[in-house]
Length: 420
Image 1 (cartoon, rainbow, N blue to C red):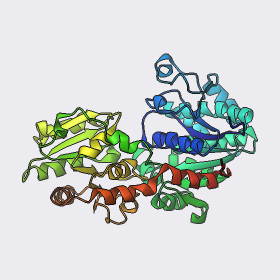
Image 2: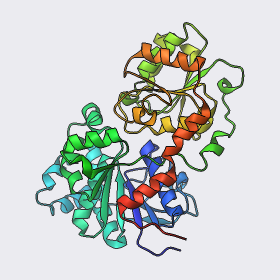
Image 3: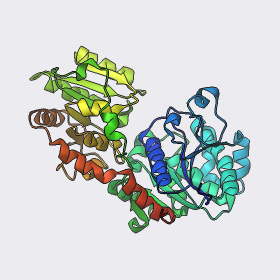
């Protein structure tokens, strides 16, 4: 066993988003390279614990409840830290003159207090385990990582990674006491390195936090795994995907404002007026009821299936006629790459940011303006008439392999490649 100091990957939860899955896949790829890897999770909640391979050590900054413990594989190495209170966080950041005023507003929201409680536990982890480097993902984890480094006074290299077009995300979803743009502007420059998951994310981050673009590295997500093709070949029990039925348009992602499903529903309504079509949506979220109401208003009825979360979306992607991403903004949409890796023709909005980069300015799929249901309907119809060659799509998706991403992160994290 490799007894070297670990490299740590830190996420707030394992609730089921793309960032969490990418960190698990990156950790597995780094472990395959011979590194000792800790997956550090701020809150013991989520549905992805069973996906963590035994090659990683799972570190929980708070003990797991019974429901989570049932999901953790029995052979997975586990380290649990004791629970922390908000008062422990208060004692911690009062030791940071010049920084505490940026954190104080977080006490006034539940979201913020959850974030603050991670700080003393991560500080303890950094002091006790002395990881060579720590990579964090998502704004709240990035702030916790930087503050934990300041408090721990360790030599751990801290790399923060932004997974979304932060200025758009903050403008559309910031809460009263949680100003993500302000937190990033103050704390990100204190990290040893910053990563954006696309060139567009890196450009936006540079503008937002007033940091030189040369200091922000763009690294492609570790999307394409060795098992993706085999999972895509698994049978899928859904009657719409049987051979001979009407073409199926597939969308994958949480039912939120960011994903702009109303534009997709209106586009499908336009397409169905001239040809048979069905829409299958994989994902759950707060907009579900309003989207169902809109589908009923458009009289789409049985033509739309809000299927919910799918454990294996790849089987759906391999059998769908067209994959659609209708987002208003993104970072680097993993589902778009996954659909391409499954050979499914794709259409996406040209939103900031990521789709144009992934599709090489429409070489590998259709790009349409954000919020334009008529343009989206035309693009769907064009792909149904003339689908993109699947082998070309799989070749393009290979640029987002786990192996290539791991090599980039080895350099950024300052961990030397391990040779057999």
